[in-house]
Length: 109
Image 1: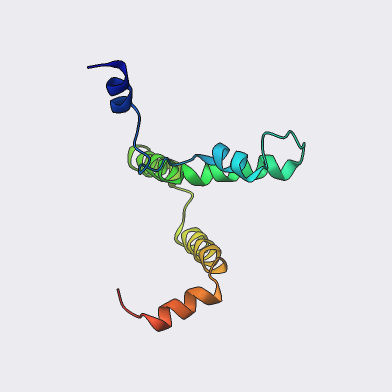
Image 2: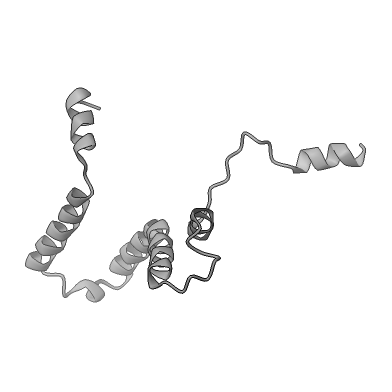
């Protein structure tokens, strides 16, 4: 094998799309890397980072609940109901008119 064949085997094909992390997303949008000094840039970066790792936070919380049940003793039925209501409200706020149109046009799974 010559060096060109070896390099072509180690180089990913163009059809493979690389998932970009929050920093790369902000760099492509021009919000980071220019040292604008704007606090919303940092907030956007941290928000994307936190949201990207949401499955990790969920697994850590579930593991803590299974391992140390007393850590969640403060979560009474009323507190759980309030937390669930806040979660559902936050999900509902993100819906748009287009979301409802799609559901009405194609109901079902």
